[in-house]
Length: 384
Image 1: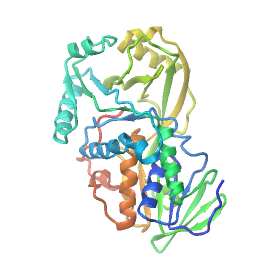
Image 2 (image 1 turned 90 degrees about the vertical axis):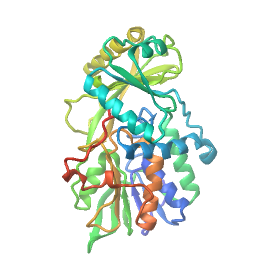
Image 3 (image 1 turned 90 degrees about the horizontal axis):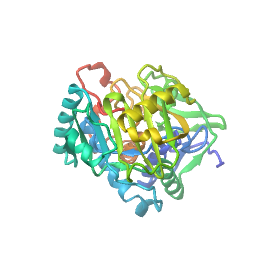
Image 4 (image 1 turned 120 degrees about the vertical axis):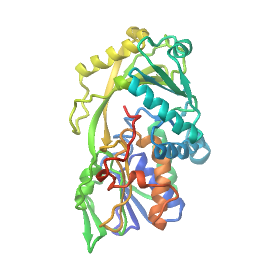
């Protein structure tokens, strides 16, 4: 455990990949005194429990741009950070059962192609030919991104951590923030379980706990945590590798390869917000039913373990990124609705721009904290 200093230029609250990315890009820009605080252990909560998807197939242009920036970082991660994150471009296959969903897919493809995203529109017959293990009789069609895939979230986070530490970032685990000091409309410091830190800039990247952190500064932001459960099979070679990330959009079910296993999960639309991360056997049975329906061969697979993680969700499934008006020096990047891992490189870069210059090269209007007052604005549709 590192030593707490009483002063810092920037304090980052949250030790997942988002906090590590912000710390790295700030240090890379020359901010000499950055402190990263994690209440538990680095990358053990949301990041470590992520399924590691990396894709460009979003419906909202702003998310596509975040993905494209992040994709370039992930593709060259070993060269820049010295860490192999096992980025496998196995592809993302989105499936649509309902006519409305299919029309949304086609609309999204227009947006994606306008932004040079490689994406294929497939009929049920084409899907069956390429992935014979899938049941397709009820499908309207699908879209496939051959450049999409998945990587190891923990290794990616630790790559950022190690590089940030070498650049002088002070990283403190088992150090919980208990209060944020605001005087005269600006941040003055933070209180922690190890003592106070005077600081003019605070970054809230606390994931599921971001709402609680915001309330310490007197802000009530529309972000809530929701449980997501994931299950892994025993080694299973009946499906040819590599297995793409298959997302059955209308069922909110997905599965992918995790060699030599298969991992799978599904959203529970009826579950209320909570910090519950326990595994529910009854829900596991619902997930396996969805799995066997979409890929009947999975009936032969055995579930060997499961885990629960947390999504942090906003009303439109898009994050809140930027400085928060009314409190000078308070920044946030929260509410990624399950996409925080894959967008962390871009967001770390953006936050370093904002903190250093007060503006960003990205258009952050879709991620503004006050956008929820305008019900006409559309959020992200490709969420499970």
